Length: 177
Image (cartoon, rainbow, N blue to C red):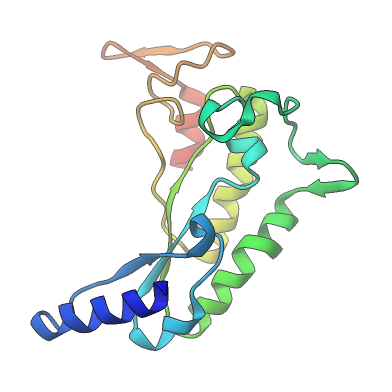
């Protein structure tokens, strides 16, 4: 159904504007590329929230309140989720999409302010290195707020004052690398 709607939309818009750039969301909250629309010459947007137990720890809107405190790498029963898991499970399918001519970018990502700061930074650093390796751009959710380096509301870090805002210098420096 999604591919059918995308095809109809792209066709209609390209009749009026043949050079219009299209970037669609991948399936399953950006986790799975839509291979059936590769022939349209459009980009696809993935996300960087996995594993959710890392990025959304104690987030009330995803039932993260009763998850155990995360570590990175993340241990879930007998399974260890680490940088190589991210590469295999989330990067590889989009590299296959890209090899067929589609552009890829990370439409949003970040780590909620309840994940321990050091753990969040280690996880974020792994995602950033994977996207750098893949040569994909990314957009953080959000610069200012509970997922970003400014006014995040984290209670486990020392903030730096920046023009009346609370700056997480360590996160900012990592993002700027």
